[in-house]
Length: 117
Image (cartoon, rainbow, N blue to C red; front, side, top):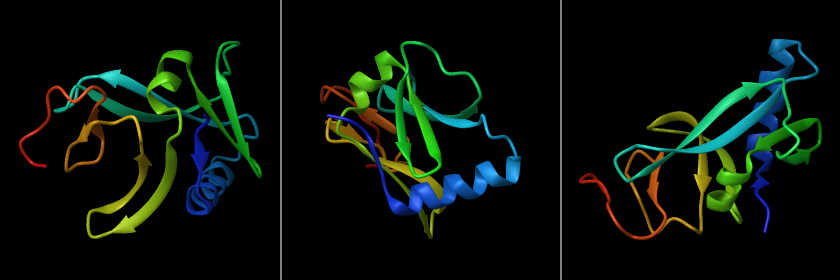
């Protein structure tokens, strides 16, 4: 299973990349330890694609995911939402056993969790 991008995410990324005026720019999505549920999502712009990266391409947008993070993100959908919480990229992750109210932290195996869910 791969990671998919919604039309809203592609549209927002296209705009952000155009603002940067850098044709080599890509979005890197990664998972790191931390957060109130054990793991947290991270997003950064990156010009460098590693040999082991998985590349997701939608229209003119490229997203990079390293091998370790892909194991946690496989089957996920990346969306861009604007709501009462603000504007942000959100990951709908079928591998997350629990998530925090912030939406940026998750537990893959059901252990842990935060107090605000």
